[in-house]
Amino acid sequence: FTTAKKTPDEIKEAILWFVDGGVREMGKKLGAINWQFQAGRKFDPDYFKTFLGALPQERGGGQLRHAIEVRHASFNDEAFYDLLRANNCALIS
Image (cartoon, rainbow, N blue to C red; front, top):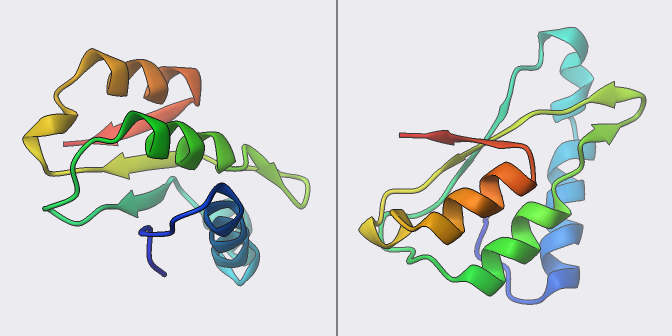
């Protein structure tokens, strides 16, 4: 799975493909889904607003939790933290 999709529709389709393609089959054993971004990926507010907004909070009757792993210094930005809070996502540091 790649998190480097371009359009909002591609992003949502890829996320749902990943979640519905077996991840949620783990049922109660499923912890937070770790969405890892490449080390060179810089913070793009529009992209991350779209990406985080496309993460399903529930699927197939089960609640989902999401954790975001970023490594570029540009993510040390209050706007990024606000997006995480607004979309109920944890930050992996």
